[in-house]
Image (tube, rainbow, N blue to C red; front, side, top):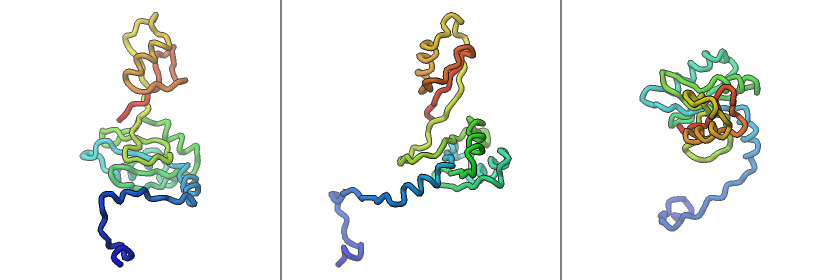
Length: 165
C-alpha cells in the first residue's frame, strides 16, 4: 500500500531509467527556436535580475524581448524576429557589471554546463608575415580553443575561436 501512495522505501538498486514521452518536445523546440540562453560568469558581482533589466535597454529592445531567470546564474531571452536575435548575437562577446557573460543560441542540450562556449575573434600579433599561413594560424589557434573551420581571415591575421568559459 505504501508503494501505491508513493511513500515506499527507495533502494539504491532502483535506478531504472525514467522513460520520457516526446509528444510535446517538438512543440517546445519550435517555441524556443527564437531564444538565446545565457549564463553569468561571476555570480558574486553579477545579478541575473539586473542583467535582464539593463541589457534589453542597452540593446534598444526593452519592449521586444521577454526574459526568464532559469536559476543557477542562467537565463533565457526570447525574441520575436530572427533579425533581432542575430543583431544581439553580433554584439558579443558580452559583459555586464565589468564581468563577462555567455550568450548563445538556444538548442535542446540537456546538461548543467550549457552554455559554456564563448566565440572570440582573436588576432595574432608578433607572428612574422611569412608565417601567416592558414595552417600556422589554425595550429596556434587550436592551442587557445576550437578554431572555426571556415572563419580564418589570413590578411587580417585573425580567426574566430570558441573558448571554454
